[in-house]
Length: 105
Image 1 (tube, rainbow, N blue to C red):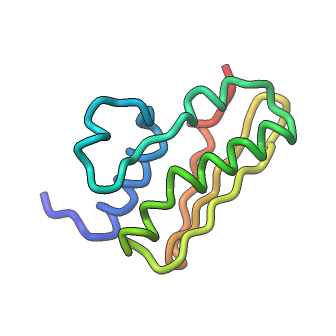
Image 2 (cartoon, one colour):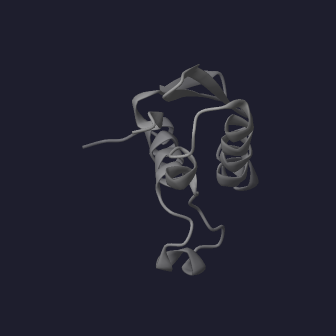
């Protein structure tokens, strides 16, 4: 199986977003990855929590720019309804939408 640099980048982003920032191996990495997104998306859907998630995304994805894996990264969180957020990522002009993973259950 051959993977491209772009696929590797998207996989690294997904790992960073959906791996808890407290995992044991984080101390071994030159740039720690992970987030507390799993905890934050369980909070009630409202503007204040949307902003908290937005800040967490920016923090969790900072490694992409720090490690020069991409030149530009824009992450936005949108409230879809009372139970769901939509996460939109744009990395060097390519976009990814992670809706199903941000539904509050």
